Image (cartoon, rainbow, N blue to C red):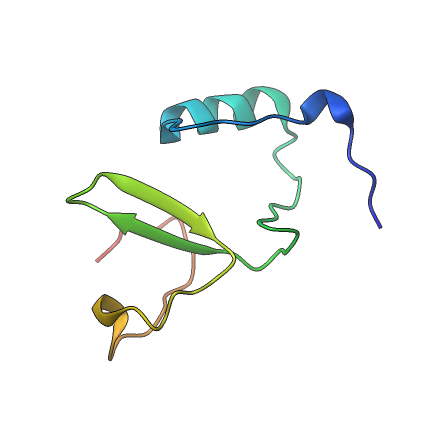
Length: 80
């Protein structure tokens, strides 16, 4: 089990993507493995109409908007 450093123990409420990215870029090494809910497997979700971005440990594949689709891989290429 990895031990976490308490100086990085943070909480945020309604933070923006910019605030999150600025914190990570400033304080976290760029080669650190990104975990969500203690898991290195992550899923990204975005609601343009709600302007909400979610990083989740669940694929949420049972949502009606994902029906018949397939999940893409995270890349640095443009979203189509």
